[in-house]
Image 1 (cartoon, rainbow, N blue to C red):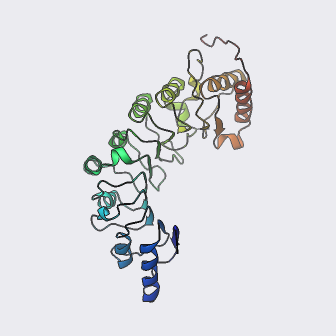
Image 2: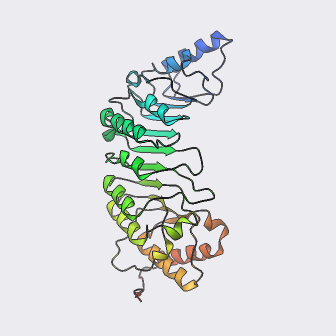
Image 3: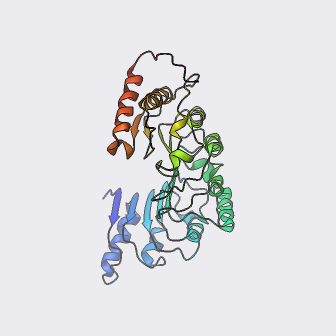
Length: 321
């Protein structure tokens, strides 16, 4: 048998030892990808222990309520992708504490963000000694709750990941805007991670954040310049800053740009200027977002954006007045 992907929906079959033995034999000898959709409620269960001794395991997805102590990841030498759902930030430290010199390239967590200074310091110590700064290419952290705080203090712990190609840090706004980042934060992040191809920073743009943030047209232009391979972008931005287009170098690699629920100005001319400015910045992008599904103004802007991007020559336009 050459099994490459195994999904276990029920691993609580303790009443049938034969089933447990069969599972152990299969995953030890064959499995390269293991998804535990309903793992044992007890993290110290024998099956979990056996999983942590799989020399050929490359992908592990697991949802467990808690991690009682440090996990000996050294015995998973082939692991390349780790996806865990946890309940508390301290469990992240136990989960990752002994991960050293692995081949881990993709890393995903669904867990509250570490908000205390002590938890962030532990995370930094782990990253410093893990060897992951050079190996990880994709990093995803989802907080599980609307309004969960994503702070700049936490983001700074990821600064040394210079080889990062995909960064997903979610903080859905819900009924209120929880995006607390500024122009200088986005610029700093782009300098840390110049190889980024996908950036999902702070959740899809919301209606309120797009009117209050100082992340503007020149912020996105600098981001695109610092990350020339960027292809997917989702970050809050102030649409009212899309008024200057001269001297902007386009990023033709961006093919997906999330505008979320960003609110457009009421003036049709202002919306046309926005479409022109956007076409100068991301000429090959497809605009996506909730606003495009239920807002007539965004449908018009999208069509004008397409018209400008398909045009071989942009008409000179002085927008400085």
